[in-house]
Figure (cartoon, rainbow, N blue to C red):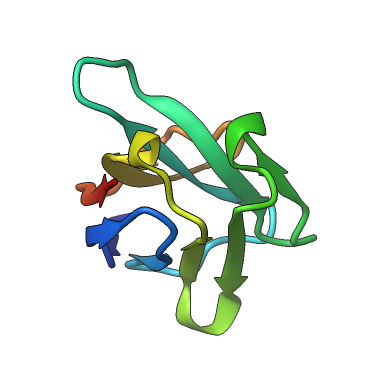
Length: 117
């Protein structure tokens, strides 16, 4: 499966962005899709994931209450709504899918989010 992420950009602190990730084929109900991010000079870290069948969601602690992951099964698309963005949210955001948590079998190309203070 190929993943195409989009929606990144440059915003001010407190602004919102919505990232999208489209899969090239149907995601099976047993699958999981998620988002990761990699800030400059840091390792890639898990952000959020969603189980395709049940819709159960998982979040990294630092973004709980600000980011929301959701899906559109008909469009094979996962979203990451990011509100109240902070400069420390600046990173390249990647989507991924797989059968386990966190998902890591297939990766998208990344989309850059830059938050200025």
